[in-house]
Length: 137
Image 1 (cartoon, rainbow, N blue to C red):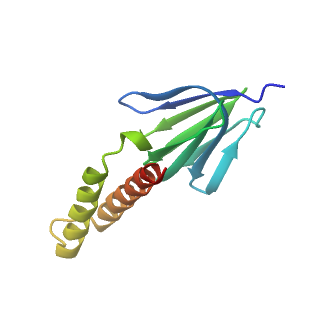
Image 2: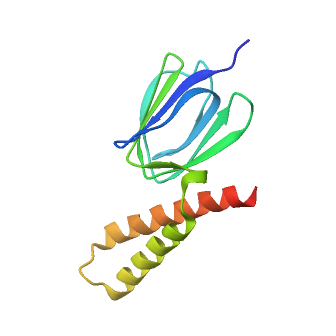
Image 3: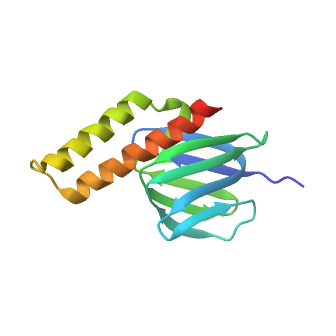
C-alpha cells in the first residue's frame, strides 16, 4: 500500500517544494503536528520553527519557516509560509549577523519595537539551528 501524499510549500517569492512525501511535521501555533497519508482535513497556522519533510526514499529534509498556514485535504498538504528555507540554502554567517544585529539593537533600545526585535531574534536563531543541523551530517 502506497504511503505517499502530495506536499507543496509556497512562499510569496517562490515554490520551495512540490512533490510526494511520506511524512510532514510542522510547528503549529498550538503545538507541533505531523501529517501522514489519509489525515483528516484541517487548516491551521504555524509559527517560527522547523519543518521536517520525509521524502519517499526515507530521507528527511529540514526547512526553517517564519510562520504561515497549512491546509490538509484529500491527501494534499499546502503550506503557505511567510518565509521558508531548506537547511542547505541557509547562509549561516548571514543568520548569525542578523542575530547579532538584533541583539545589539535590543540592548541599545534605539528606535526599536521590542516585540519585532524578539521575533527577528527568534527567526535568526531558528535559521542558525536548522543550518547547523545540516552541517552535523
